[in-house]
Image 1 (tube, rainbow, N blue to C red):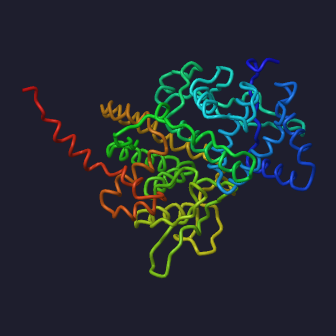
Image 2 (image 1 turned 30 degrees about the horizontal axis):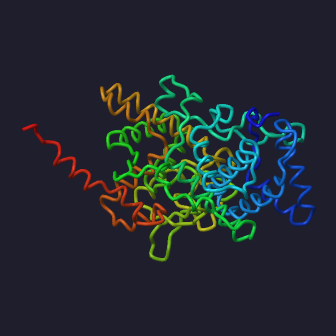
Length: 425
């Protein structure tokens, strides 16, 4: 089969199976294990593996295994290394160890405009299991064409021709491939990092002097979302008491949606709300980069916790050894983020209709574009007006104050005010 007609298949499974594969290579015949696995991955798309592919795959597995401590980081690194290997092996028919500066530039250009057969429309599982046999998911693609939530609700659908790699995506490619080649150098597999040889990354990555736009709800939108969710909780407490509590946590404590859901990395419990020796309440979570942090709990958030627990039939506040799931589905915790995302979006959609009924059409249209993550941005943006920046930084889990500074728009507001009354003459 010609390399130009190959439909790509995933090379790497999820974190747990990949770790198991790596551990097997440490006690058994590494080359045979990896060759057998690659044949499973590619059996229906290529007839023969490129020379040296098994060894290169082993280097990639070892590199990815080193990032097993962070689910999000592992997924990002897996995505880029998968793309690189497939491009090298089946498009350029080169070894990853033979790439030069120009090759990396060609790879970047390829990622900016991949072949249509490499583009899909939705995130799917990389592998599927049928009759006890694991096989690549034929619907998986290395690149995903997306459109905004508002455009989708307007009836638009993504097309392969509309695929566009974001500036953030470009930056990740440079950073991840740079780390990969540095690791290969440290392992004495190669002597050259072709990524650092690119002197003009600016021809790919745009430089900007503007402040990044923080997507957040307006005061009117937030109040309508909160009011709507409270009404839903009164009308259908079985379904929406939990929704209201999640909404309050996402806003008040700037949580990411993944920090509310149970995963193999972290499963939030009632006792993650705890009182210290000073009689102050905190919430502990594990967030981005697998970092644990504790967040100061406001009186309003504490009251919301009491109301949620009382609805569940518990005492108002959790004991230090309370192991009950924080966000519950049946007798267990909510697994994954899809359920949380769906129920919060239901509240957004209901708030949009209320705004329209109030003739607030502009606010309604803006809210249609909002995602759940905007609640985190909104909470941070509001609090940074009143609390010390360093306190907001630590509660939000920002790695530096520079990130928190993006939420401070006082100077932008002043610039807008001084420009508003300018005249032509």
